[in-house]
Amino acid sequence: MQEKNDKLIDDIRTLFGEMDKRGTGKLTYEEYMEAVGGNEVIQTKFVTLGIEDDADELWNLIDMGNGEIAVSQFAAGANRTREPKPSRWCATDRVTCLRIISEETKAKDVFTINRRVGNAERSLDHS
Image (cartoon, rainbow, N blue to C red; front, side):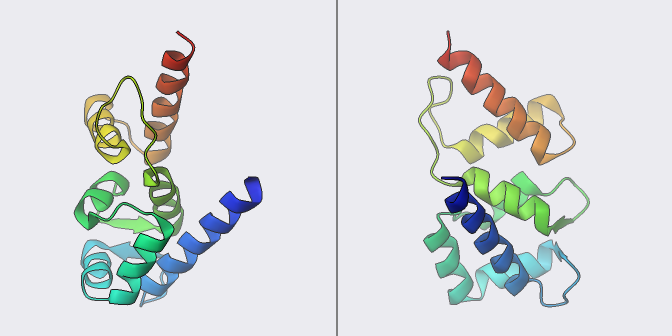
């Protein structure tokens, strides 16, 4: 299972590299939207990898307010949006839940938000 997840993260990082035309290791919103909106190959890879297909929603989840995202942010955020798991505490998809939690907690990074979501799920599953 770990090998499959490692391969997925590598594939997501490769996708990011294809979108990063300047080769800076970061994407601005404009670069991201141009890559996602204007490139059928990129769009197909999003679908194939099972990444959230709403480009704005994914950007809003990943961007920490500085107007650009790094490859590590993209990989972590994209991986977390894959195949939302049903949960007793949230009837909507995982991206929406993460967005709500990020707004409510004012967390500074997607990793903190994801950790809090995981902790909440585990707590509820054991109750």
